[in-house]
Each structure stands twice: as C-alpha cells, then as structure tokens.
Image (tube, one colour):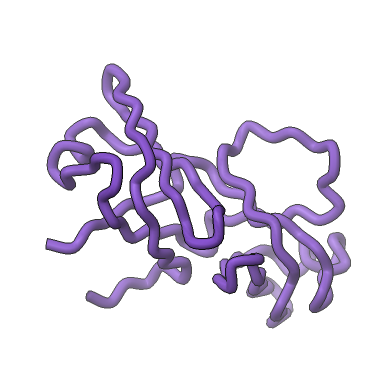
Length: 142
C-alpha cells in the first residue's frame, strides 16, 4: 500500500478506552514514545484493536503543528513529540519541516512560510510536533 500521508509510524496498541461513540487508543512507539488516537468504536471492532496489536500510525504533515520554545505551555492536543529540526525546505508559501525524534524516527510538518520565519526554525532547534488525537488514523495488516 502506498499512501500520501508523510507520517507513517510503527506502533503497538497499549490500551483501548471505549466511549459511547469513539474510543481512545493509546499506542506505544519505539523508544518509549507514545501517542493517542481517537477512532470510532466501529473502527476498534473492525480493526481488532486490542492491547499488543501492531498498528500503523498515519498523520498528515498538514495536521502537525510545530512548537518552539514551548516550555510551560499546555495545549489541548493530546500528542506532543519532542525533537529537533533536522530539515527545512522553505518556500514562498509553505515550509516542510522534518523533526528528528529521540528514537530515530522523523516526523514531518507542513506549515506556512510566515510561521517558520516567526519560529526562527533552523536545523538543530529543539521543537515539538503537536497533533490532535482525532488527526491520527490507525491501520492494521490483514
């Protein structure tokens, strides 16, 4: 399968918390990192999401926010992966930001040129990749 999402991460379901319509799925990533996904209860059933199940975590780069100098800032977005800028392709409208995580994985974000300039993004700058649980799509092998 090929997919347009820039961020495709391997993970393992840690826990599933069922709600009335949606469920929260905690996913462990390599290196002790984790994320939370919000998916429908039907998806939990159809994908067989239970603790220990390997999953693919998909997040579009345009759904990833970049936070620089975020110490002490609290956000409602459930996912915050700390890393450093490892690559920056800046154009007149948009910038593609590569964020190297401590586990060796890279997360990609697409932000505005003005946003990249305002944050002073340069390789080596500590940043966090921020995205909502509802922006995460989970996939399983069949």
